[in-house]
Length: 193
Image (cartoon, rainbow, N blue to C red; front, side):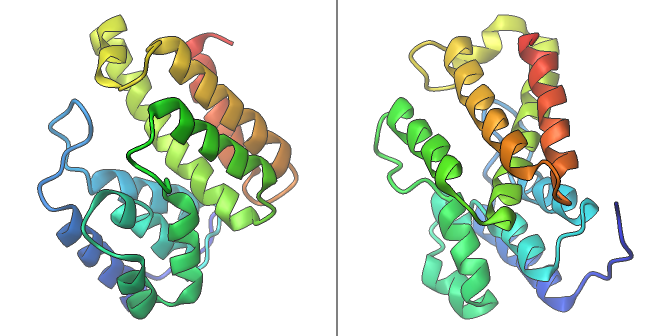
């Protein structure tokens, strides 16, 4: 599953760039520095054999969506492939309502044929669910209030279940199958499937 992997200079640069861009942001409802999340996403990808561009995209996947950084900055520093991965990992309209944004994410995953892009999205959702499971164990149902969803828990269950179904269907039989399997385990632990 894992391979020997050296941290290349470009990956180290991406870690520094992302940390600078995310600055003092924290994970929603916590005191955990936001940068921990993209580093975790890169970690999961590297565990399953990500090459350099995908590892960098894991580190940078939220910089365009959640910081002042632009896609052009990402492209200039890290190249077209990383920019493409980051662009497709980002929600196109942060001003749209929650359901519209999440339906877009699910539908984009359904039509996506790029296995690396699917792996990136799956690793992102895996880290989110790991955090949700931990926090749910400590906060109980009060956790769902931190998300801007009309129906709280049931909206989150719909969203992650729909994505899990897509990732399982599209990543089974690839090097990324373990990511989808881990996501399924987290989903079941939280929502009791």
